[in-house]
Length: 259
Length: 259
Image (cartoon, rainbow over all chains, first blue to last red; front, side, top):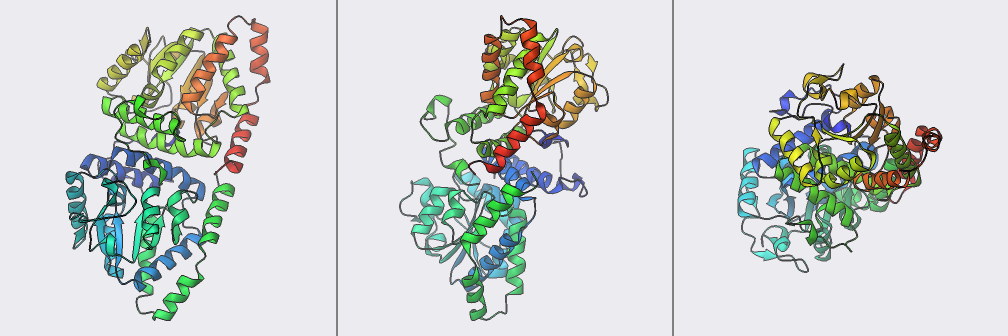
């Protein structure tokens, strides 16, 4: 790839990235991930994953396509209808949208739970602290006193009163094995992923094919707008959402988009 | 992205990656870049660039398409015809294909020159040493006693008897500004890049749209096969290569490929 380094990588704070730069969103995303690695909250592999996502975002036109907006509205309705909604946080999510996830948790009255592929006590604590600095009241995932069935030991760790007991979970940038195991537990699963054919969006009840830095604030906007909606209206939004059509629309955009 | 972490990232040596794994090439690439970061030869941003490339490679089908093979053959012919061929090495190239670049330099009697976007004396020396460990005899780029015109100071640094004086340069994974500036110097430029619409392949005389870990050994194979070809045959290969058709074929494959 060539254009990745057409602006200096030596940026200290994100305010230094010119907002009028044609690749502003990509540069901001990359800067936040890099800062996350330096802060010990993002695994080095997260930088690779983000790069991979950025290529798909480029193919999508780096915008929230209409089918993604519909998925984000359905996600908001699911979260508002849930008895025990939980938002799952990994190293990339924490680096990219810490304040945005705290705001969404607040808007839909959900818990935030840290769940890591490469789980170490230091990283968990650093992420929980990072979330608190960005407005999160309470962060789960430190207890890890329950296990997701059919998953290897480290990745199966969850809080008994968090993801384990949740009816609706938002799992952004989730690995495929874990997304499948959560699906098998019967949970309503909302996945944010830029590749519509990845396993995670394929098993999701609501696949959101969008960049997380656009998707999370948009779900929050929908949730605030729907805060006073009655249950029948929320159920209608959920029923109207067509996951297959959303996946197809994203694939179609990637294939025909502005390469 | 989800499948990036469907195999543990905690691999110590590349021999631990199972060769029969369906994502072997991707895992190997990622491991080498990660090791490069840890060794101080690859910038953290290189991990992001590699992730981005891997998405395009996935769309290409993770194989050398026929038009890329034709480009690789034309690249070999150009390098054999050159009076002063130079192969440019950055942090990702050094991490991914150090031995392969040394073998190509040997096959076409070219110089290797280290050229970095984020240039520090420590990184340059680490990369030169890494190349020597992988069989490179002589590594240029440490003198930096000449400048590419029309480029900012740090990125313009080259060796007077290296890239500055070269007639044919192979610049894999090059940034767009530098590729343009080299083109303006009138050099025959061979670029390896997985996105056919990046600026670097767009300005190249020979755009090779292929993964560098496949492209470099294939150029070397062609060069060895053509070692005894006469000049007229080499010139015919160069003349027959159609850069526009190669770029179009790559884009077509990405759009219609196995998403």
